[in-house]
Image 1: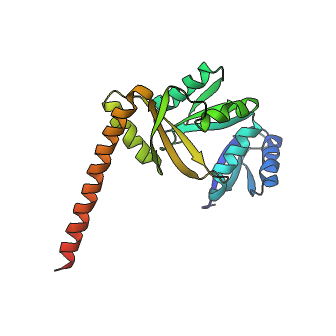
Image 2: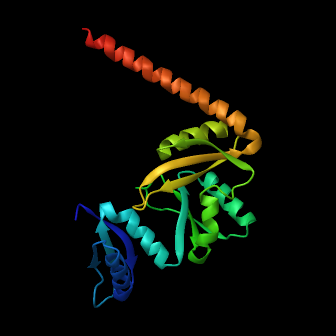
Image 3: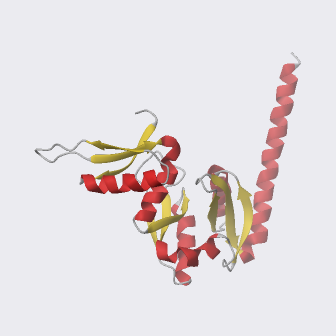
Length: 213
């Protein structure tokens, strides 16, 4: 099953079958692998989906469990900052840490109760974020981490809001810093981007000079 990934394990078959039905109702093919010994009742009942459907399937399972993931990041602090912002608005969240080392770009995840989702959306779009300003938008989580690490070295806290399309594919990562530190943060990140551009130009020039020989 090279193109399949396990998304959850269960103790009872009906638990897996219920979630399999939910996935199939959303056009996701799922397979149950029952490794539980019928006599000793050892082993696990596992639910698999194709790799391409993994993110969407996990999101649907979380929703079925009464939770929706609203944020995730490599480091804990940016996720906790958003959690604290929501807590001040009386919106309770749950912070989870992944144990699966395949997901090094999303180690920490923030969840909200489904009934609180509508109330939370204006924060995720930035409409109700006060005291913080967006300073950068990146297309990759690694780029966001590089920027946040650089800000942290300069004693500037930051958090991120991820925007995804309907298929749960990442569209952009928006980096927020406190209003009073936004000018300093912008300067720091601009200088970094300038260094990256110069490095790229140097590499291009080096490549062009090599082509002459």
